[in-house]
Length: 220
Image (cartoon, rainbow, N blue to C red; front, side):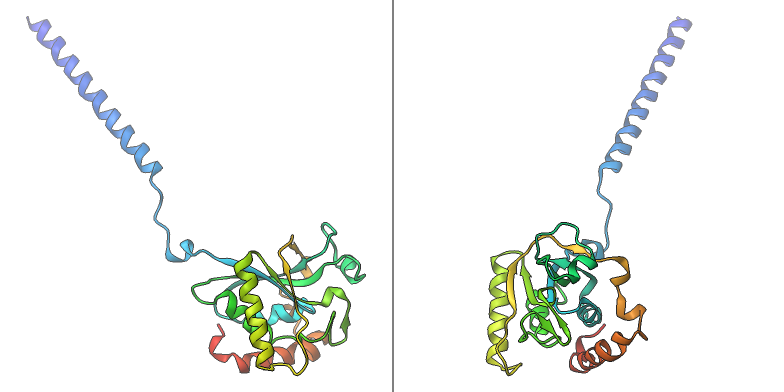
């Protein structure tokens, strides 16, 4: 009888131990499958827009200062050549334009805000040219990703024409979005890393200073 009682105690202990282990393993798996809590910043859905307004060093320098712009990348878009280099672009035969790709927070700045500003930070009335930079690679262009963006860009362009922001007709083209090729590393953040370079001092700096005065309330 004593042996039987001892056997029952061992059996009960074993059952309790197994039940405890299964419960612990089940809790661990549930925890590992539960999504972690993320901050507000990590849940923000950023959007992108690609614009061409002549030399990308200039447009990059301007848009970097705006609130809501998370990242600015210089690159090439709109042509047929795959993986073009800057040397290729300079020939003017690739069909690509020098562009910037903006990653922005639509809660802070909208697609239309960005396009409305675009008319003020370059000359959209000179065909395939910005100052002394000439060629199709320097054309004024907005790349749209869908019909809604196209309509917004068209409306903004019409408003700019009516407001006579520039005395001559706006020749900016609206083109469907194509592959964006990021430019070589030395082109990225060019104005800020080369402030004393001649082009930066005499061409970009006046544009940046004018922009900062005009949009001082929207700067970071």
